[in-house]
Amino acid sequence: MRNGGGILPCWGDYEKQTPPDNADNPPVGVHPIQRPQRQIEDFQPGYPQLSTLVGAHDTFQIYRRFANLRSRLLLYKQDSLSVLEKRLNEVDDNEASPLFLGSRRRDRNETRQQVLARIDTELAEYDNLIERTARINAFCPAPGRDTTSLQNWINGTGSIARAESRYLAENDLFTLKSSDDGPLLRLEEHLESLFTKLFRGFFRKYTAFEVSRDHQVFIPTGLLVKRIARAVMAAVTTILILLPMLMCNYLQNPTTRIIIIAVSVLIFIAILSGISKAKSMEVFVASATYATVVMVFISNGSGN
Image (cartoon, rainbow, N blue to C red):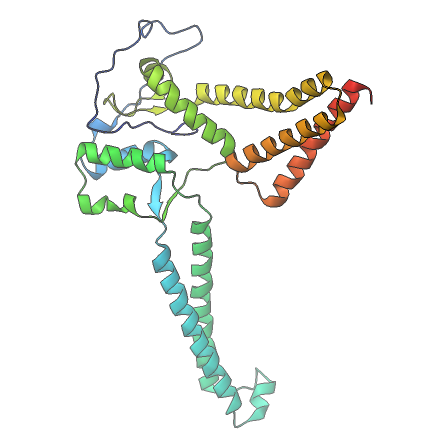
């Protein structure tokens, strides 16, 4: 999983994992992760174990939005308020004492007071549901990788009723896990998958929370992967800035230089649009800034 998430390989494809030769002798500065007092297997099968796994890391905090139900309730409450609004207008239009409409204190029309009371109650419920729905919709969609991992564990243990685990197949899932830096998290995810396949024994013993005694279940802390991902991101950024400058310093043809700068900006825009959720204006500003930086470097380097 990204950002300290977990890796739950497909159940049924078990292979006996052979620890590396240096598994018992970790590198300098690397210490085994302390095992928690209670692991998943220490709880009863079923929801006790599932809740332990889900609570072990926010990666597995995956739930349904129930978007259709929320929309249904909102539409019903909206129509109910529309009916009350129409009823209030009718009461006002049929008011026998116009003085009541000009003074709330002297208004003795009980029907209008009852309608207003109902409007106040239902409007509060409507506003409350709107706010709750907005909060739920603000959460990020659940990543497919995390959902698959949780589904693999449920299928592998077989301790949860099939009908009660079908929620993971719905298309309105969201996660409570925060995503502060999307591009970096995606890079961490790919690196984590790669390192887990290549150095599984080391990864499990020295860089993972051992929430389970099952060797197919572990949650990497992500600390090592995070550092590597940041180093890779820094290297890519440096290359994107320095490579056009170096190429232009060797090429004196102005047309060729312009082409190199244009291609570099296009590559930058493609990378930025592909790995981030930046808005159009943000992409435009970032691209303009990048082009300016490259132009300044090239101008200073060439002396023009």
